[in-house]
Length: 323
Image (cartoon, rainbow, N blue to C red; front, side):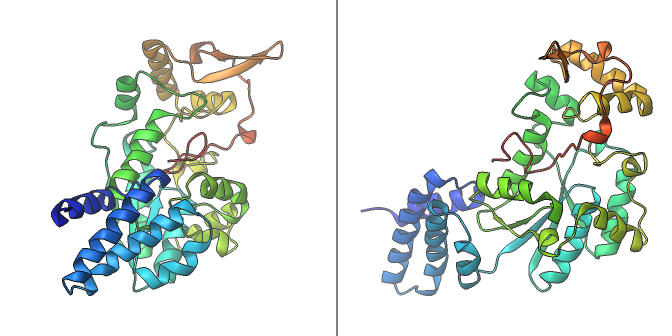
């Protein structure tokens, strides 16, 4: 006979990790149904509710889509997590979410990469906390001190499948913190519908509320809303950057890195030295219709157009935005 204590451990382990991929769905379904049955036999009918919840979530894991928006309200009261990035869009998303889901459990979370972001980001984070009336919880990687530590330990900077800094210091931090039943809110706007569709397709196990899209808010609206709230937009925006990422984002192209070389020469030199240390090249150029990687030290001045680049970096970013 199966021991209920063992069943409880399996159930709690998978719930706590919050990483139920679809292949785990069957195990959770069987486990939760058996746990519910054993409890109901003892007369503990109320305690069977979590098991039923996980059973239905497992079904949804096998059949992703809009089904969850119908069944979720009948199963549990979720925790809403706004993933703040020190950008204007995620700030507005946090404000809307706290208003829209008033009375619910709403957390605003920032995955810490502040060391290599513009120092003005700390000011912006503080201003946003005052505006939304809620403390922004800062989460740090348990394995890496900062992005440079991550690059060196992974011996890798960037490639077709993304960058280790995003994977380990944002996505993995989110996976470690979030639970199975959380509702996720990201700063994707109404003019990023393709990114939203890709995220939904590649992350069917996540329940998301696209508060900016639903409100018809685009990126430019976010800058305006923040400024109308009396908050100065982050310094990187004021300097002409489209996103408030780390200074010298490894996902940037030639135009972006030429701008970094002009605005932050010391940071450019630091990343050029890192390339040589690790043996990995960040930028690529096309020569005779062939694309090849190039060292930052050899990057020609004036090459590339930064106004054509749009670099995103967040807890959903990656080659496929999958988890």
